[in-house]
Every structure is written in structure tokens, then in C-alpha cells.
Amino acid sequence: MRKFVLPKKYWFLIIVLVAGVVVWYVQGTKGGLPEGVEVGMVEKGRVEEVVNETGFVKVSQTVDLAFQSGGQVKSILVDEGSFVDAGAVLIVLDGSRQGSDLFSAQARLDAERIRLEEMLAGADSTSRAVTESSVALAETTLLNTRRNLVDVTAQQDQLVVNAEKTLRSSSLEAYLVSEENENSPFSYTAPTITGVYESDEEGLYRLELYDSNSPSGASVRISGLESDTHPVSTVNPVAIGVRGLYVQFPDNFAKRTVWEIPVPNIRSSSYLTNLNTYNAVLEARNIALTNAESAVKTAEAGLIQARSQLTQISSSAREEQLVAQRAVVRQMEALVAQAHVAYSNTVITAPFAGVVTSVATEVGQIVSSGIPAVSLNAHNGFEVTVDISEVDIAEISVGDHAVITFDAYDDREFTAKVSKVAPNATLVSGVRVFAVTLLFDEESDLIKDGLTAQIDITTATREGVIAIPTRSIYENDEGKFVRVITDGGEVVEQDVTTGLRGSDGMTEITSGLTEGVRIITFADEEAIAQIKEN
Image: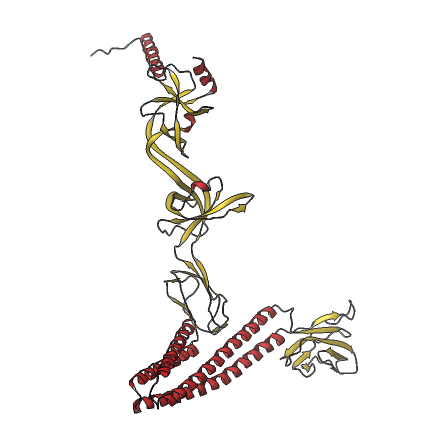
């Protein structure tokens, strides 16, 4: 078979012909418009207004939990990092006293209710026996509470004494005040201070060494908190006065030196810890004594009431007696409720599910009221906070949808909603901003506290509307207009009314244009000048 091959000159003519057709088509589409002009067809579409800002992830709920009244820690049921459910028990104080008070208050309430029922039904031998039993129980309760007050007072006083001794006697040191001479071959090592300081007076001991005929060749003159003089000893500790402290100098000690011993040693690194412990023991003592004294007063009142009831039981109940007894029952109910609260306050429970971030106490430690003992962060309870400028804040409302991305996860998008808009502005780097909070629509293990978030908040949306590029809209003294290309290729200015201006470069047209109309979407200044000239 023979192949048909065109000569090269014919191929050249074909290429020129095709190029001419293309140029003719493009010029026909643009209607003979000059270069630098872009044309588009009016269509319906979607217009969105989006505010874009950078924010940060933080835990939505965090709380420091403390006991409402102090006491001794009995058990700690969680560690740092533990996950707990809402209502889980975290830390328990020794609640034996509160439990006893609750049991006693409940027993007295039961007795008062029985007494009221007896008064309504009429007295008999059985009711008399019950009332007498109530009197005996009240007497025993009062005796026990008084004994407990004595025991608690002695125990707490001893704890205070021990803490006070520790504060004044711990880490005592001698500090050099003056040296014998700079080139002395003798040791300037501080003498060792031992013993327990047995006095409430605070101040300084001053130890002044001088030459003497003692075996060590020197004696020490003591002044300040006490006055005394005795030979310097390098073998055994020697008493500094009569308040329990002792001093022993090192071998080859420097003579004719002066030392000072502060009591307590506020220069010691342990002083602040010992001072805080002492103050905590004092507060715990006050709480314990207040509770014990309150228990005695309650028991005394209970005995008075029981004896009064025993007197009343012998006679028929009058109306005023019934009114008084009903008041007693209500009073006992209030005491039971109060005891319930006191008992429940010995336990810290989780207010919501979360992760324990810190435990600030130990078993056996005495904790004070109001001092945080455990901290908790909500589990997967994260939110995003972002500062919005006053220019954009008017567009944002609670419930607006948002899309969030993180620098750590480039290919993941998370959805959220605006949950809170701050009512007041704050000044950040000289700019007034409003704090906006967003909550995620779904939880995710990828979301971490402190992540940097890129946030797109959709503040307004128009679906199925006439939408054209914003740059195709012009404005003059009479209003806004668009350059329309007629079917005959003529360019005319068409007045339009705009609606929502989107963040994606599109603007809604509410009147002036219909679908299918061709418009100029862009033209440089030279092209516009040519259009106006033509």
C-alpha cells in the first residue's frame, strides 16, 4: 500500500490556518475586546464570609481541690497521671470523729422522734424507760466528749511543742564574726552545735574565744541569750548555758575568734519548711480543739434536753409541749444534716472525669482547710481560645461553625463551634481584641493542651445566589456597577446591588444581574481606557 505524505509547504499552510481559526475564536468570545481583559459568565453559587485567626488549645476544665476543714490524711487513692471518673474518691481524711458525731446525732434524732410519737400517743411505762435510756446515753456521751477534749488538748499541745522545738533547734550553726588574723595556720572550721533548745526566747548566742590556761589553751565567753564562761573543748560537747545546746570545737581551732549562733537559724535552707510545718500544726490544733469543744457543748445541750423530756414524760402532753417537742425534732434533724456535711467533708471526690495532674499531700500529713491537696484536668475536655480584632468581632456569634487545623497534623481538619464571645475587649500588643472560645464537635486523642491552631470561622453563608468575582464590581458616585457584554459585543455599565461579600473573592448580587450574562471580570487600566474610548 502506498503512503500519502504531504510536502512540507502544505504542512506549514495547515498550521497557519489552524492558528488563524484559534485567534478568530478567542476574539469572537471576547467580542473584540482589547488585551488585558478577562470575561466570565454569571452563575449561581455559594458565598462564604470566613474569619481566619491563630489560637491555642487549652483544657476546658481544671480545678484545684481542697478540704473545707483540716485534718490528718488517712488514704490517697490516686497518683499523678491517674484517670478518674466523675464522683471517684481521691483523698480521705481520718473521719472517725465526724463519723462518731454523725452516729450520735442520728441516735438523738431517733430518740426525739420516738419521744414526739409518745407524747402524741400518751405516756406509758415503755416510753418512760426509753426516755430514761436517752438520759443515760446523753450522760455517757457528755462524759466521753469531755474526756476526748482533755485527750485532744494534751495531744495537740504536744504536737505544737514538738514543732516549736524543731523550728528552733533544727540546723543550728555557728557563724564566724571576726577572725584572729588572715595568715593564721589554725582552722576556722565552725564548731559543731548539738542538742535541743529548751526555751521560748529567740535571739543570738555570742561565743568569744580568748587565751587561757585550760587544756585546749583557750576559753569561751558566752553572751546574748545566756551568759557563761568555760574552757574550749575539742573532745566532748560542752553545754552552752542551761537551755539544752552544746558546742564542740574542731582540732587546731583558731583562737581569739568570735562566733554567733542564731536561734532559730533563719539562714538555714530548712527554716521556711519548719516554719510552715509549725504554722500548720498550730492551725490543726485550733481546728481540733474547736471541734472537741463543740462536741462537748452539743453533748451538754443533749443532756439538758433528755432530762427535760424525762420530766415531761410523767404528765400528759399539752399543746405547748408538743410544739416544743416538734421544735426539738427539727433541731435534731438540722444537727444530723450538719454532721452529714462534716463527715462528707473528710473526702475529696472528682467533680468530673479527668486526669490527676498533682497530689500535694501524703498519708499521715495534717492538711489545712482551703489549701489545694489535688489538682484535676478534664479528660479530653479541650477548647480553643483565639483573640479576634474589633474589626471582625461584629461578624462572630455563638454557634458559628469553624474548621481547625494544627501545625502538628497538616492533613487533618477538626470542626468546632463558637461557644463564648467575651463581652469586653482587652489590649494585646496595643490592639484591642475580644477573646473567643470554641468547642470541638468531637473528641480526639490527637488534640493536646497547648497546640497551635489555625482557625477558619464561617460567619455567614449564602447558597444558590448570583455570585461574581468581587474585583469585577466597580463603584462611582451613583453606586456600584458591572461591565456587561451584550449579545452584539457592546460593553455597557449595569447597576447592581450587592449582598454578602465573601472571604473567597466572591460577592453576592441581589439585583441587577441574571444567570447567563457575560461580564468583564478583570481589565487593567489601559484596557478600561480603550473600552471607554470605543
